[in-house]
Length: 129
Length: 215
Image: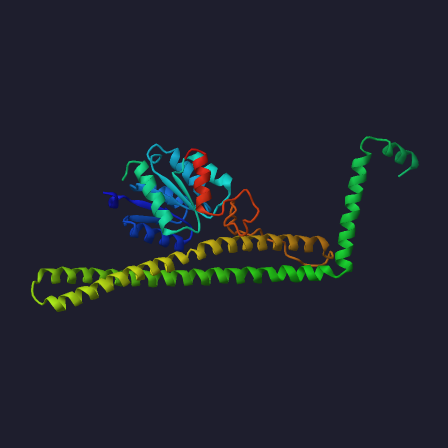
């Protein structure tokens, strides 16, 4: 059952973390934790089990690209789908995210339907739904 | 400089570089004199003094908008929880009425009422979701404000350095300490995307770009 999936929401703005968390809950994914940057996210990913990462890019300490790179070079984490949700709208950033292994890319501001569609699409593709 | 050495320097391959260096020196001197002559040192001092105030004002805006967004989200959370309770109770009542074979007329009216409550509840939930989504402005404007604060800090440093360079020898001006503000390495929200082919303006363009790459 997809409702048992555990999400990690990574964003330096608490407002955005709450919005994404509430939207995931409305879409049936109530099990979520939060991290304010890539460093905290990586610690949580290594110390606990998650099925899906929703990450911002522009963050202090460790940005979303660096987090994505760390996840993809870690044998225990590299299978995790990472959905980038960011205000970075440069085409080269989108291409870079895709090349680094991001499962999806959403530009802010976004709608509930967009987040729901991308998450469901990625979960289906990954065989998690 | 003797005439013979001037002649030898002028014929040397380094002559153009020396000339450029002399021109740069003259320009720097001219700028220095202009700043002092026009009383700009004082103006620069004023500008540098105003920048920390501008930074604190922007930080104030960022803090207040953040607090407002959190307050709205708290209220939305509570309203959604109460709405969930009403919807759940309405469903329970409808179930009970369906089990009772008597009182057909009042039951029909109550069922209609429950239907109205459920429909209104769905609309209300949609409105609350939209209110919640609107709070994303805090993230987006916050990123822009952070960049402007960072820019102001950099300008402040440069102005103080300029002050030091143009100050009289006996003036006591404290050298700037490098600001420790978070420096985003990325661009953040696109404030004006018009005519910029390097950025996307909506999600459909992101999807098209990724599709063109085979993702």
